[in-house]
Length: 343
Ligand code: NAD
Image 1 (tube, rainbow, N blue to C red):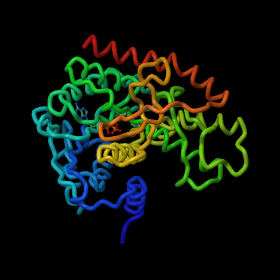
Image 2 (spheres, helix red, strand yellow):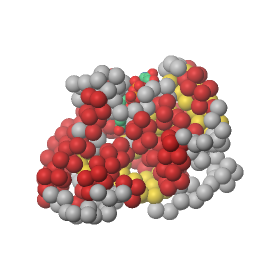
Image 3 (tube, rainbow, N blue to C red):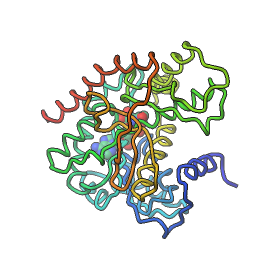
């Protein structure tokens, strides 16, 4: 009997993948998880092992990867699993990668903001991206390590310095914000969550997370009040803190993040394989606003990012939210660029 988790994952992956691939009918794809033994890394590695697009799954961490790799490798799906541990094995883990997912770093503890994590995670991301530039410069990169608002600009600077930067290949993973916005909206609007769509734009910390509930579909059964929309917006922005506090010092969102990371990686793989109309929200190099990086809907394709889509029409509340997030997002971007240039 399949467990509830297997059924949920199976349904999500089937929905995410419009064609029913079996091994041999989809091109070989090597996916690497950097930080694979962590709270996010472990369930994310399992979900990528269940992904029918993945032929090789490379799991890297500074410790603990042989156990995770052995465990995950027993799952009877197509992907061949290999575990790598320690910096001397990083090159081997990365070579020939199509997609590198980075959940390496330290998570938020109670009372910490994402920016408190900055110095530790910025250094980790910088080192990992230096290795990506060397060993798999053509791979798509999905950045999960926080603060995403700064780690994506850091990665771009590292790649620029190495001469390998391609803005079509670097993505900040904001899918958890979208997943939360959809769940919270469905509950409030009284509509089935499976069919809900809510774009989330801006960045990935506090007020920089801007869910566009005015564009949510399907429409609520009875119109949501201004207060409802404000409360939904705040809950989406504080979703990470809700989990940090509930876990009472034992970590931050890991299971829902792994699910969100697997959804976004799946979308990237669908794009690489040439499937049409793959659209997700992501934090990317952008001209949608005056800021150099911004999250919005993007179209994914054979080269990674095919098109950054616009914001659509915003309510007055969302327009205000957009203006108020810009200074904070700008400062986080500048902080990342400064870190990369000084280190
Ligand atoms: P964790 O501490 O459980 O796991 C992190 C893993 O990274 C550990 O296994 C650790 O050994 C590994 N690691 C540390 N340095 C490394 C290095 N140089 N190379 C490779 N691996 C290294 O933390 P977690 O809860 O899994 O969170 C990981 C990151 O994801 C944190 O930065 C967290 O803030 C972030 N996060 C992002 C989102 C998002 O929506 N983007 C959501 C939740 C958490």
